[in-house]
Length: 69
Image 1: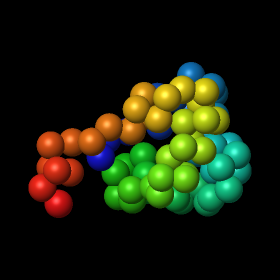
Image 2: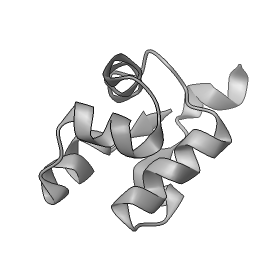
Image 3: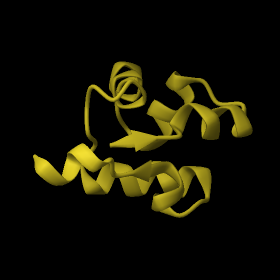
Image 4: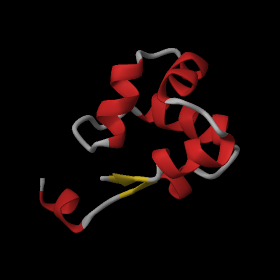
């Protein structure tokens, strides 16, 4: 899964720590999601999108390989 968290954070001038605090996770979790090492739960993905005030599809997108897993 790809994501645009880093881009969305820049638009809001948020650090990873800022976003983490707003959604109730650690900065390391946000870092792992940004790098594609961790796929967030549906709840966490929805929270992140809501903080950015965008549709979840604007932040997260499936890749072709996601369909074969």
